[in-house]
Length: 103
Image (cartoon, rainbow, N blue to C red):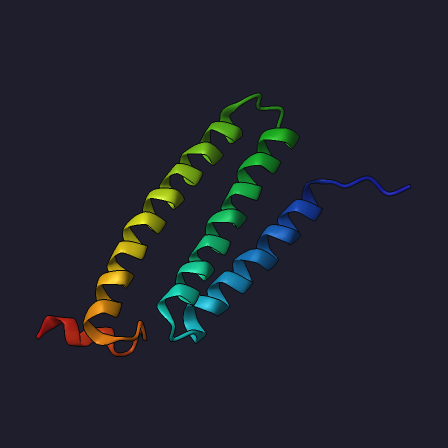
């Protein structure tokens, strides 16, 4: 029977990171870009917890993960407020056309 090791977690994390990076680079909708960023943060969380488990650290990885979750929640709240403001002014949230906010 095969045991799940650190390599499995790192592969899963790299796949999530790749999907998130792909979403950020290819999407024009700001909400989808934000979802890609959340995938990247979740891949970091998997790394923190996996290294804490397999390196013998008791709580350090879990505490770092909690900080990342709090940071992600604050980032989503601010980003959604900005997106709602952009939608009120422009009736869309396309990333390419947000540059018109400077004017």
